[in-house]
Amino acid sequence: MTISSSLNAGVSGLNVIASRLATISDNIANSATYGYKRETADFQSMVLNGVGGSYSAGGVRVSTHREIDRPGPLITTDNPTDLAVSGRGMIPVTTVAAIGGSSGPLPTLLVTTGSFRPDANGILRTDGGLALLGWPANPDGTIPSFPNDTFDGLKPVHIGQNQFAGDPTTKVSLGVNLPATETRAGSPGTPQDLSVEYFDNLGTSETLKITFNPIIPATGESNQWNMVVEDSASGGAVIGEYNITFDSSRTNGGSISSVNVISGGPYDPVTGQIQLQVAGGGMTLGIGAPGSRDGLTQLSGSFAPVSVVKDGSPVGNLTSVEIDANGNMSAIYDVGFTRRIYQIPLVDVPNPNGLITHNNQTYQISPQSGPFFLWKAGDGPVGELVGFAREESTTDIAGELTQLIQTQRAYSSNAKIIQTVDQMLQETTNIKR
Image (tube, rainbow, N blue to C red; front, top):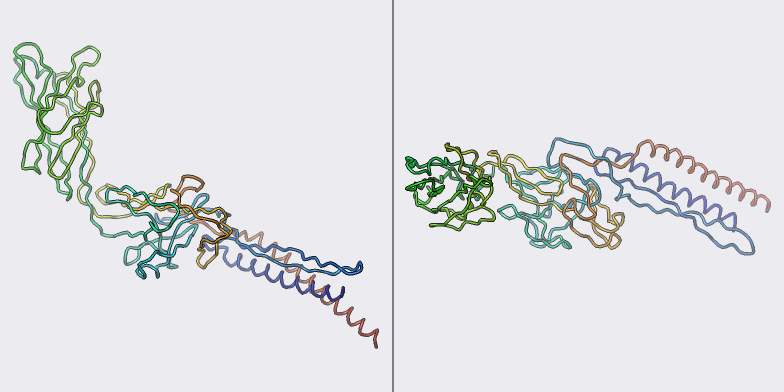
């Protein structure tokens, strides 16, 4: 029995060492595979209780596992949609074959890196047939509130090349100095005109004509102006008229003292903004808060439009996309404006090494991995999402070659055990003769 157990132990040793050799072979073969996670083989002894004080060799068994939670080094690339995770978390993807199939939820897989490029349909995908998933943004660039414990809100990321879009103007801020000398008694009372271009909901250029009319007193100085706002998109109609009084004190001289609404939208003294209604909808016109030097001022004798700050732009053609550290994907248009179109979340599980491994360095949720949760990149336990980057293989060639030599020696030693047991059994057979 003892001799036979030695033979079985040698055979089990050959089997488990063959498994270790297979993992080493896989690791070396994938040393240049992006996102590859090293496979390891662990040995555990088996103990058999002997009878009457004799000892029986139990042998050895093997268990293999992939080091999914071990990060590989990141390298830079020239593609903005080459993605990698710096830290914990994984990128959700699906198979291109599943898109356009059934109307149910798409099968979701996880990767730690991927080179995504738009296909003929504008879907961001890898050469291996994996499509990037993300939360789609609203038309104004905001991300709706999606549940974080389900994949149902994720959609394939679609980039419409040669897509046109406009960015309507919703905010205008004025930095204008009005001449104080124009509000004195006897001054000519010359109106000061200012034209501000803005873009409507269709990207068409329109104009706000703003006229500042000084109020001339009989004596002294009024420090008052009448501001009239006209909208070209409304046929030149007056959409707001305001009486503005400026402070003449030693401490706040030249700043706005008060604003009286004659017609049009209200003035908020806290923010210093007027709510206008142009033909296409609401627009805020910032003229400054009382006591503030930002906005309209009345100083010296010159009319000086120092700055006009506004948002919006004409219709532009989408030229590229970029992803920031928080997973926000923004479309960049040739006229200079950007708009968030997706947010790519990162998926975290309690036990990444418990994920089910599939081809193309993809992984799937399992009972061993634990429940998943979708995080905004850079929040909670997950790391940042890095564009222009790929994650390299975690294989260490020098370490694998060292283990290869050790494995070869261990295999030869176990083979020697079998050879020795065979000789002993032959001697036992010869005794009977």
